[in-house]
Length: 316
Length: 243
Image 1 (cartoon, rainbow over the protein chains, first blue to last red):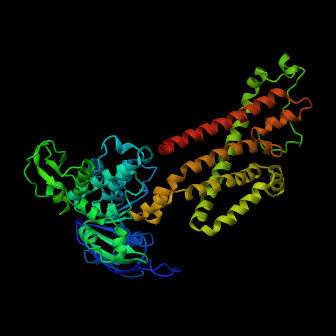
Image 2: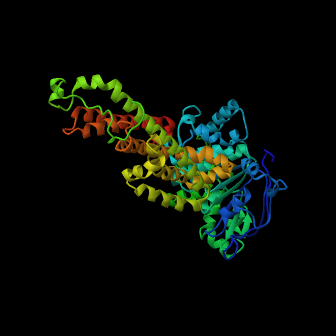
Image 3: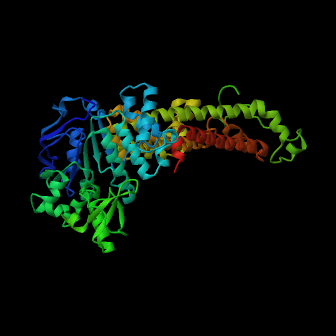
């Protein structure tokens, strides 16, 4: 399997559990382009997790195909397939009896890497996910907080530099503040790593924030809509999708853009509330409403004023 | 001590001569240092060594059998209930009865003691090993599978190491219990620390120094074995101390 990001294709992928009525995943067809994050989202019973586990064959397909860079997953040896795909789950599933180094080094050891190479890789990854490469490598999972454990889970999944990552509600068990930070860091990492990622969540806001594309699954495992976050928010294909993304979808769409991306008018007025250029349109609107103003002063990273944004600009 | 004999079968029973001993012995005090010093080499020390040997043998064999049975029950779930039921039956037999039943079959020898002792360890060790192997959290097993560990690798690298605390807890209980039950075995077979204890009890006035010395040795042996295993567990599972 390639180590650069791989294209992932679901082609009429179907899962029917024996003894159960109806399919869990029903003729799912979608393509995740190499290097993009595809978020699977939907109500429970929508088969998101099942669809994810079909890819690394933790659950066997009933019919249809899944291809990674054109090769069917069934053509790979199952352990080789799994070792070449990063896998992150909500409860992390770190090995409690191994140090952080032992945990992160799991797949490289299975692949027979040299000790020195594993040591270096662990240090590199700890740094990447914001942990201390010297101190934290010798600690045990029980010594870490939930957020730190999930970072280790991410590092462990990235250890052998997989072309594809499967993430099953990775931030679902973490409190909202830490979750937001982990999401931001994950997106920053992704800027750099450009993996192909399938990301399962039940949280629409997380889907909009994280996804390059969002696949909305409905009850019974059928695909309701597969599109970019903007398309889904602005043009939901039906009632179900519109309902699922919520009545505030117009407001959610405002989170997709920052004030810095707008055309700003020159500053003429003094004493305007200031806000940094990377503020989302939604937060800017919230400030305008709260402060009863018509415009705000946008500032650059160094605090220098860039220009003024008005209420009309935001709502355009 | 050479050979074996039935404890109640006569022969040269070592009973001190109260009349010609020290004042301490004549008054049958609880602890006469001189007697312990004089009889350490030919009575107490050999009995202690025999006791340790019995315990190691019973726990060692018991552990090997328990491990094999637990592996079978872990791999083939349907074997769990029948193994467990069989264990309950044997565990309910009084130890003296079991020793007596075996006597005509295996004769007067260490085997007659080791078989029941081993049988008792099974029913502490087997359920502990099995419970330990089954205690691995589902998310840990799922991540192991998802990362591409084979069934065998999952067993050796994940399930077995995580079962060590439960296994060690079982070993501690089994060892201490074996040390205790082994003293009772001397009721039939003159062997181990039970031998001087029964010798002392056989005397009409009960020979207190011998009774106390041998009993204290058995208690110290149990405590030492427990402490040693506890240390071993700490060394084997540094991760389990963090909570």
